[in-house]
Image (cartoon, rainbow over all chains, first blue to last red; front, side, top):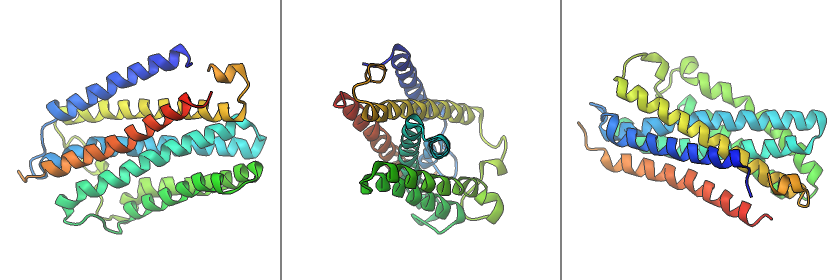
Length: 222
Length: 34
């Protein structure tokens, strides 16, 4: 049983995702030089933002857990990082599908691509470390330390294009370069994906709390 | 305009499978957690 606010939130996210799909399909025009594949742009950027959100929330939980040893902080860390890994996977899969017809290659060892792959490996290791270590306290501590190491890669990903000028384009380089319909579609998709990521983090957080305290009524009916 | 429709469809399908699959898995795990 979920709280009423979570159910309303899920309904709102469903409406936002539907609006985003409508805008991508019917409102945003295909780009003149890249064609329809440029429409991946909207979900690619929005997934990257959701990935940042997941990893930052997760690392905040990991920091609080190392400092105070609260079980809820560990649940928040697991929730944020697992959702971050899902959106990071989406970024790493949609990127090459977009790059193939535009760059002519699926993958290049560009600084942003490499640092994103590195980030994915660290946080996938976080998920596996928790399952591999049998002692729960050791698993929580070791994974929290790994999360803090991994979060240092986030600014490297974000500023890689400005710092090293690889093949990956920067949205900042071309302000107001797109038609209004494209910006509108981008902002609606960003809002939908951030809302979806927050909902998934909330649900994963509740699931982890149920595992930590299976008999607690406040958790079982949260 | 180049013909890149197949890649556009593949990209959106891949996204739907990854994120939608995780959301479904999460719902399934929550349903069987209590």
